[in-house]
Length: 260
Image (cartoon, rainbow, N blue to C red; front, side, top):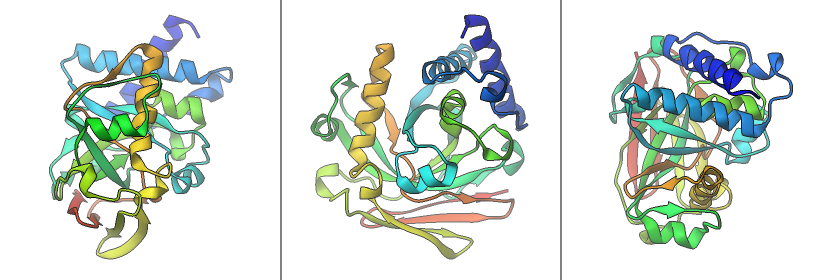
């Protein structure tokens, strides 16, 4: 894919995000698009945001659980970046009109005290570099019509990143069994899904290592203080104006968001 095509598709997808207007899956017009092309487009979107003053506060792992892979029909994990304006306060409001077809998923968030660089990043390095973990809700919002995509297309679309909410209690990873850490996500006061940390690649720290090793392809890494969302533990719930989502996580309290 030429630099001109990458720049054009990055502009198309970012405008779709900023204007909350869905576009056709890009692989329909570019059937030869590869995973590498998808990441090149994603990185160009990141460059465009940074050029306008946005700060990148961390990264997300996407499609790290079987539930999410089944839900969207994709078989490989991915990563995307988190811009500063994606952050919402715990209990705050997400403006539905600024999103296309948002869905919310429960996640375990990691915050680092030391930098991490790949290739060869492993679970031990991740746990040694982690300051704490905490509950998170990620609002994903594909910029594609009908939330339909293939792998290169979702990678290009920043792995459907849109908003995130952090809350609850922060605890050191060594104080928790992250594999058996249980959670329930409630939608409008009713339980929607149940899960445990092992649903994310067997251990959520492995999702952090995956992001680090994928970033190493571009000679990038994670800095101290970086936030990493490790991927949906369960399937995501679609939300409309007036909806409320609450996540309760074992030993870590709760975090919530409502849609206005």
